[in-house]
Length: 386
Image (cartoon, rainbow, N blue to C red; front, side, top):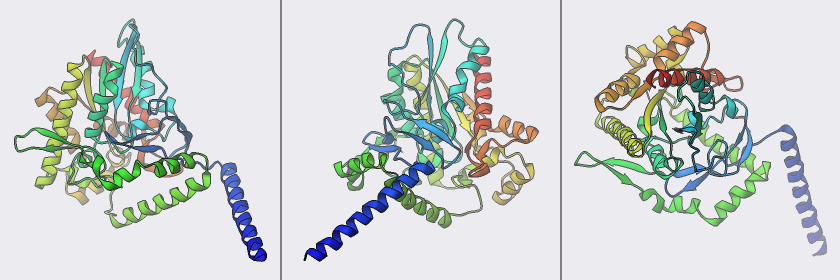
């Protein structure tokens, strides 16, 4: 019996030693993959306040989530009289983990707006509320529950052409643990928050899951195991859904809706945009929607763009931008489409606005060049409209 206990003790000690060595090695290598998000009954998920780490899956940047759960500096709710405050709502393009904070488009806006005299006598302050994976519904809820408390003078709503329409449809979106707006028989939008009562979502809120999230903050081994599991699931999903176009791009958004599901998804999206604009105005804030192009829209190689156009049977890749600009004119919502000008600049300068050395250029999210171009175009628009 003593011998058996002795062997067991040696085995346990060996495992612990191995884990400690693995932990030390991962830290020396600079490996970091914390759990950035936590479940939220109102929004589905939010960033976890206080998490700080290097983000290296795409690009490389040290990312800090502030006490309010935003990828930004801490900002008091009270707005000084000499401050003009802008609230940015969006998804991963605004969260911008791929680049250092100071290179994100919203961090570049104050200097550019100050240079054009956008608000004479006032200091422009931009607050980022972007969270990866959010659609227009979650951004609208964020506006009402969080952003408006900071008394913004201007609300910028970022719209991602490639996936926001799908994100806003319960029927089309795969991630169901989030609030959705449904189009009722009366043509009005009705909010559905039933996801919060689903057993799977409730389990994610449990104490054991919270303990795991917190333990992962201090263990690179746990982070590696979780990262491997999630990466394998993503790879399998990508392989199953490979369609010869950029991952995350829905080809059907490049042409008018061909079926009832996508027509409804567009109507829900447009309804949410109008409601966001009206809510902003009722609370004393101007409003601007701007569209974010996916990588192929602004690829510097025209031949590559035209090849995809031929494959998809469309004359260009700008249908979402045109539709939203025309919708904005009809509904009185200001819309800035970035894709046409960014496409021209990319081709003229032979520059990639998307992609990184560790993932490949011409795909994924904006790099520093993309953020600079977006900041320039948004600032030019705001300065012209002031």
